[in-house]
Amino acid sequence: MQAPALRRDSVAWELARAILVLLAIVGTTVLLLFVGGYSVSSGLAALWRGSLGSWYAFTSATLVRAIPLMLTGVAVAIAFRAGVLNIGAEGQLLAGAAAGAAVALTLGGLPAAIVVVLALAASAVGGAGWASLAAFLRSRFAVLEVISTIMLNFVALYAVSYLVRGPLQEPTHVYPQSSTIGDAIHLPRIVSAGRLHSGLLLALGVSFVAGWVLRRTAAGFRLIAAGESPSAATSAGGIDVMATTTRTFLVSGALAGLAGGVEVLGVTFALYENISPGYGYTAIAVALLARLDPWRVAVTALLFGGLEAGAGAMQRDAGVPSTLVTVIEAALILAVVAAGALRRRSSFPASDTSPITA
Amino acid sequence: MTDVVEPFFAATIRTAVPLALAALGELLVERTGLINIGLEGAILAGAFGALVGASGHGVVLGFASAAAAGLIVALIFVAFVVWARADQIITGTALTLLSMGATGTLYRTMYGSSGAALSIPTSAALPIP
Image 1 (cartoon, chains in turn yellow, cyan):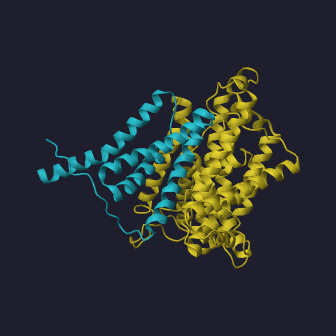
Image 2: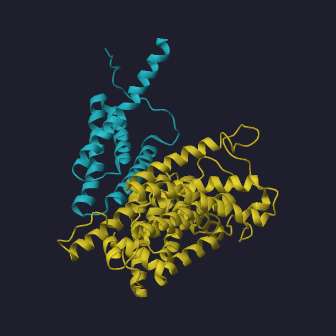
């Protein structure tokens, strides 16, 4: 894993790159709208209206969607940095959502603030627990975490589907969802007349702390060293690579699980099957576009939150399928990995010993 | 008894066919030392290709365009992984995402989003001796 360094480029260079990405997104959107035979102007107008066009759209659509993307994006970024290819953020998010919902629904009698804290803690533990299955298989039997985490995503999906028809189903047993969590246990709103909840502060805090740990602490250095070159970290650094990567894997799972808990307590207020529209997968794009830097994840999560919010508006107002944005996200991931790979190839023509480079 | 057992075996074979074909494809690519996580994307593209091919021109062209659609996805994978030496796992994940979005968008563009069941010519039942 040759991740780009966490150095700070000049402001001009950062701006140029951000503008390039935005141009690429707008360009791809225009191209796809044109090829699909849709009205380019009304499509773009709807994309703008749904994401940034009004204060309400920005806070209640873009920011609300950016919150789970930020948490899962940081989860993926730190895992990839440590050389752990955790594709399982989606499953860990679902496990966290289930654990958070279960705690919030069972502990209704306690003071609300305590229930919120306990439910969020449970969601983090749930996510870490789900990741621990893959982490254990990886450290004990050298099972590729890519395969195990992808598989566990489906296990989590079907486990949630069982829970909302079994133990966690609402009392009338009609709908495949849990009871609604009481108003007192919701995450407080931070903008009046909107859906934006205080999970945003949590997500921003997580992104700041994770970036700070990577840049400024010994633990962060060990994590990066273990990811960059496990053999050098072991022999020259005296770092216990397996312990470092396993810990990172668990923290990554905990953050993805936290995203699930925040969704349940801040947006959906109940557990049901399609609680996540693939946040855990989009998180990979969010992390890669941020070049695996938790600080930049806060920005790219916002970008993808806006894209997904705008996609909904495009479908409603301009009749453009919202799946179009999935194509744009995939194209962005491919562009980022290809650009990184080509740059490396041109600077080190003959050095391709590691097949895994991002 | 047979009216329980027979549909069970029929369903087993029916669901096993796509699994077997996809696994065969992955086996080939893994023999070369690559790992293609984007298999799901190739299956989705193939299903869409079959729909487009068969709806206009019959079963044979349906199969042919399904294979061609899978080939296109594989070619993108090769371009990124073999030629540009990009990460296989990330490329594969992105290809699944790309295929999901592209088939969804194309389907709704070409056939509308009503969700009405389309009917296309299908291959005849194959009697098992």
